[in-house]
Image (cartoon, rainbow, N blue to C red; front, top):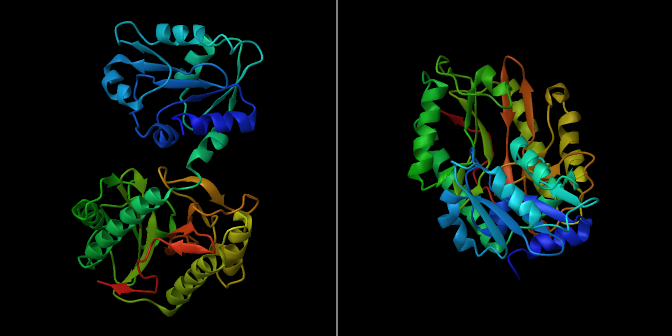
Length: 367
């Protein structure tokens, strides 16, 4: 298989005349290397016919050359600016004239990258093809699955080590600092995202930030949503605990979320639609006494990006297929009081799913 075979397959399937790629998860999946997106644009254009071109900052040429890019490279230096390289690249793509359709990564390409491409190819029509381009990451290879499994394993080691140190009277920020240290101690390459460590009323905010001025109290819910990265793959795990003790009401609240999570893991299998999975999980919450506290879909794809296809939500009729990885993360949130979310990362197999997360889900009181 040639380096650009996945891109040519997308071009053939969509009828696009070219695809423009910028550094990010799709770039990493195709070329095996990522580049920082800073003030210097790096853009690759792959046409359906003819040779591809690359616009590359000169200071990145030493890193770009090992990719074995099978086309012409137009490099540029800071003192001259990037527009000249874009214009030369455009001139090397005469087939992308009037009526040509060029797909771009709408969720990734920046405005000034896009405007430079428009100037270089003024007669072409540009359209958002992010979803189509991202299909290169939809099915994970065995090696990619193992990388994510290891990211999860190391993250779970870090979580258990953190829980052993949590005490009533700590702040969320103190617990967050412990978690960060344990993630790197466990051997993670980096963070999937800034972790969420949220106690009490803060746990009722799905995307909370740790507070330095809130002291964790007995009876608080303590929610961790976090993940370590390993070989570019991102773990994404949520577990909720109670500190000191748990009320009967909060126990029922927790058990409802746990039942929804279990339903998702029980029914998911190849051939089901993402909509069917979400519907089954959501109905557990919606048919409970806590229906008013449901706020979000069941989950999302996971891999080189923390959020990618497939989106596990009602209305998404995409079918689950072996090699896809997604999260099952139902949650309930009582504003001003508490929140519970339980999130697992699962891979679709030939017969069902396998949960890559193994951290216990049963209600646990810590501290």
